[in-house]
Structures are given as structure tokens and as C-alpha cells.
Image 1 (cartoon, rainbow, N blue to C red):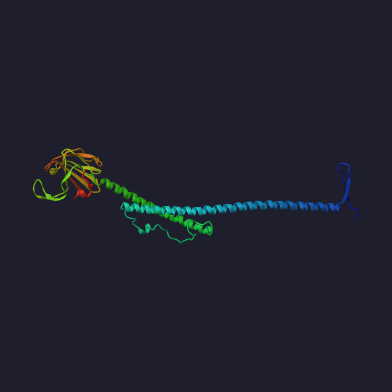
Image 2: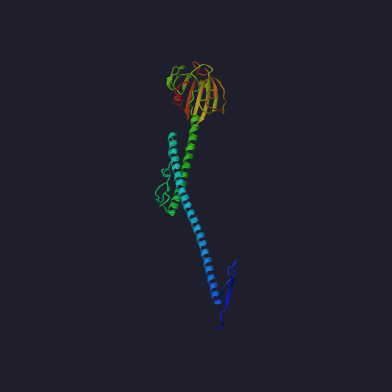
Length: 308
């Protein structure tokens, strides 16, 4: 066996200190290099593992934070759905109040008016939804059911409000067509019903009311209408007939002047003629008559209480 080779290391210090030298065998040197390399690799691995764990921990924390935010958003969404449900219920109550005030019947189908879609009940502890104690799966199921229910209720309420709107529009037109305005100033000289005819002296049914007033006073339309007749009419002298729609017509007799023509659209309060004494009359007055589907009706049922 040959003699082991040695390596000599010389350390030259600064100043006056002596030079130092030491020798290391080649075998020991190899062991040292291997050991140093192993320690270096272990250090590098530990540093890598540390950094990897730090990154993994950061990502995990970020993911947990995102999950918490999503859960909170989900619960907030559920609570907002409840707020919409509450507002829709208030709208439904308002719908019913309008129906009562406008004398509009409730939706024909009670089944439609239940505003429900069925299905199982999911217990989330009630609203507002708690931030804990409710599984995400259960919450998602409830949100889905609530959205379906909201869509069902919204569709029904939309149809209900459309019905109310159309009904009110119809009532508005009917109100505009109702002859509620006094056609002239004066006092009632003869009412609706049986009376003694002032010309013939015989008993007759008076189909309107006579409003005594000054010759030449204006006669106005008591509501919106279309002129269906304007001209001489036997015993009524110069007369006008207005068609208000809904089967409602009004007649104005004994006029001295006519200011409208057949087919003309007149508005409530518009002057249509003047008080006269034409036809079978004992003095200046207006014969005012209301008919529904051709049947005479007491005009006092529609006129305001106070004579203008």
C-alpha cells in the first residue's frame, strides 16, 4: 500500500504573526467534500421546502378567504331575496287595497291568488340567514326555491296589476262618460216620473227633468260624448242627443240654438246650445233626459246634489 498523499495548507497572516501550515490527507479531504456537499444539498432542500410550504400556506389562506367571502356573498344574496319577497308581499297587499278602493274583484282563480309553488321546506334558521350553522348545499337549495317562487309570484302579480290597470282605465272612461255635470243653471220645475201634462192636462210619465232658467242661458255637455242627433224633434222643439258610450245617451229639448253638429266629439262642460222655448213648452226651460240602453233613468241619480 502506497503512502497516503497529503495536502498542505499555508496560512499567511497580516503583520508579524508566524505563518501557519497544516496538512490534510486526501481521504479526509474527500470525506469533507462529500459531507459539505450533503450539508449543502440538505440546506437547499430545507430552504426549498420552507419556501414551498410558505407559498402553499399563502395559497391555502387565500383560498379560505375566498371561500369565506363567497359564503358571505351567498348568504347576503339569500337575505336580499328575502327583502324582495317582503317587498313583493307589500306590493300584493297594495294590489288588494287598490282593488277594494276601485271595487275591482280579486283574481278569478283562488289557486292563482295563493302565490305558491309547493315543494319541500328547507330550514335555514329563518331570515336573515345566519352566518354559521347552515350548509352551503342547503342554502343553495333554498335560494333556488326562493328564486323559483319569486318568479312565480312576480308573474302572477304582473298579470294582476295589468288587470287592475285595465279595469281602472275602463272605470276612468266610464266615469268620463257618466253624465254627472248639471247641463245648465236653474231649478227643477218638473221631476222624473208620473205628472199632469201642462199642455194637455192628462196624466203622463215624464221621462226626464225640466230645469227652468233664463232664456238664452248656456247648455253644456254633462260628460264626454258624440253628438248623435241635432235638430228639430217634434214636441221637444230644437233638440240634441249625445251618445256617451256604455249605452248611455242624454237628450236636451226646447233649445233656442244648437252649437254642435252630428258626429262631433264634445267634452264635459262644453257649450252645446242655448235655453229656449221651442216645441211643446210653457216657458223657457231645458228638458233633460238620461237613457241607458234606451230606457229612461232618473237624471238625479247621476247629477251632483247641489243645483248650480
